[in-house]
Length: 159
View 1 (cartoon, rainbow, N blue to C red):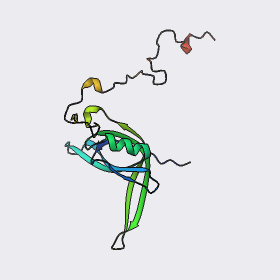
View 2: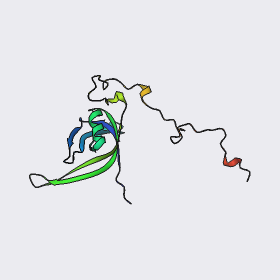
View 3: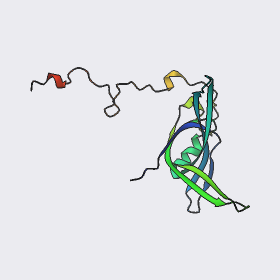
View 4: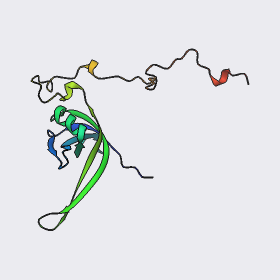
């Protein structure tokens, strides 16, 4: 069994470019930047930036074109696809893209506002109440905290 899966959480680097396939299906392309912070051997803090090309189709392309703007925080889940071609000089070139399967918009204050909205929320700081906090004992299946009372402990079983 093989697996081709990519998870990217980062900021949009350019507004989505929308086009249509001959079949009429929408395609949106945009970039995402991800940051990596680390301390080098000399103790200095460093930052690396990686840029990713994202392609969305159909309904995801429509959502991306309407709600994503440069600077918006977005989470993408998808698969990697590498294309190759010969350039005008005859040299082989490669381009790796992430074909998005799911897209999750970041908080409203992180640059993710609808394009047609006249209010600019991208310059407003994110409020603490806008960021969800998931507790360590949170059970997403039941959407409730685990119950400490009334549970049976294996040590309490008499046999």
